[in-house]
Amino acid sequence: MNKKEAKILTGGLSRPSKMPGYSYNLPAERCNVGSKLVNIPGTVCFDCYAMKNRYKFRNVKEALERRYQAAKNNPNWIYGMVWDIKRVTDKSTVKEFRWHDAGDLIDLVHLLRIFEVCKLTPDVKHWLPTRESQILSNIDPRMVPDNLIIRLSATMQNGPAPKSWPWTSTVVKAGASCPAAKQDNECKDCRACWDKKVKNVSYGKH
Image 1: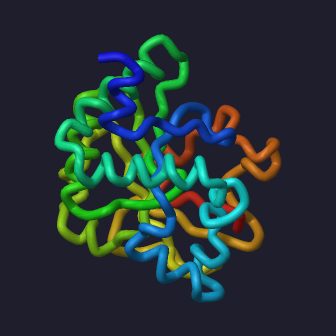
Image 2: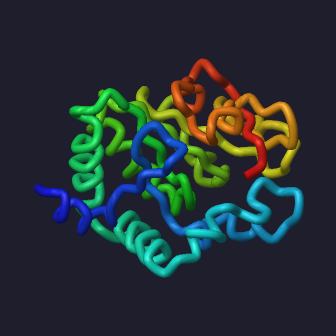
């Protein structure tokens, strides 16, 4: 397989400037929960960053939709993702990968396919933030691969962390534990989001 062939299977990886490594994103408009919360003031999705600015460019929207269709419909998506993740991590000192810097889980099948990708890339630490609590309710946290952390997000800004899942994230107006705002909006050497010892990460509102 080569990069072009992998892109056909997956839609291609994304490279967020904030992250230490690569990611995979989907259209925020396709979120099951987020597409509803985006219109409700005070929720963590209100005025979503992934529905404005560069995300409105035609080429970006087309790339996001291409990834969505691949993740949902391509039977060889798992193999393409594994190949592409190994391509960008095997010779790199960065061994972290983020799922969905835009967008979210499609359904339970999508989540289980992500599990397979993680199992087949055991040297990579994966982080998956989500608001799809209904999808997570179908699995036991013990089913999650050791190299994957799923963080269930709170619904409301300044609201409490969810109690239905062991790893969470919250959005706060002040006192965020995420240091990005103080370091050029980048992770730098922080890896708290990928660390299962950190039960909750709080972010400042984008």
